[in-house]
Length: 291
Ligand code: MF3
Ligand code: CO
Image 1: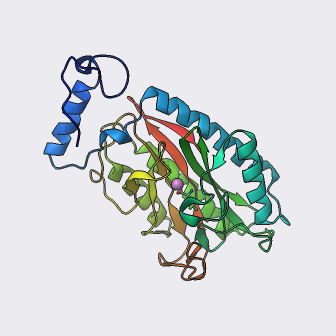
Image 2: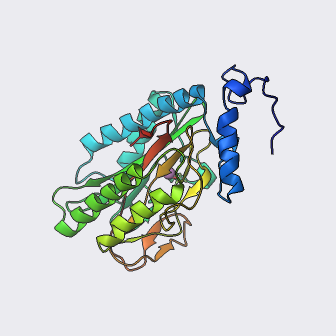
């Protein structure tokens, strides 16, 4: 709920301009979509220029950390070493690793190897070996602004089957990105991601999705990949969300480790891959803020 703003009052976005000269037409356009029965974003999901600038600073750290890991990840390294790199680099740049203590999560990063779908715990006992595929999922808080992205890494020579899974999953993310347009719908993206994975014989995890991000770690909307074109939330300039499908080589079913309540695995033990990008919807398209 929000109080109605007078046309001559300052705009809610903080621009300092009069509402009628700023977001009035924008709000009317959103209201028309709502009247037609579409889900529409609330104002707290629409970031202003200052917030976007702050989120971009946060994302710079996130990208720098992933770039460093990309250069240094190797067979024989434990995933605990990756956790230490993420903690040390993030804090030395003035940030905080967002996963650390998030809802009780005990590490600075998620490292998910092979049949681990997501939320893998870094460990001294998990030594990366030739042929592994691993997702490193980094998230940063800087001055209260959140960024979030993840990449896959192939350790040495991996099987052609795993390599194809990793590549197709990345393609899925870019197909999804191409389907994001201002005044389009989240389901346009979802269907594009879905169709590419399934056309390649893969499945996409249903229970875990992406999310709005920026002022909090996880904001609305929830971002799934089993939605259809023209459905789900209206996308408007200023929204920021992640595209992060978990693509399984085999069956769609997953389970959560019941001892720690976090680590997610494929039910059939076949590999799973994930890439995550953080996308800003702009006036005329998109801008990838973290990758
Ligand atoms: N970074 C992941 C995401 O995309 C998951 C982090 S959840 C955590 O939301 F609790 F493990 F941090
Ligand atoms: Co995320």
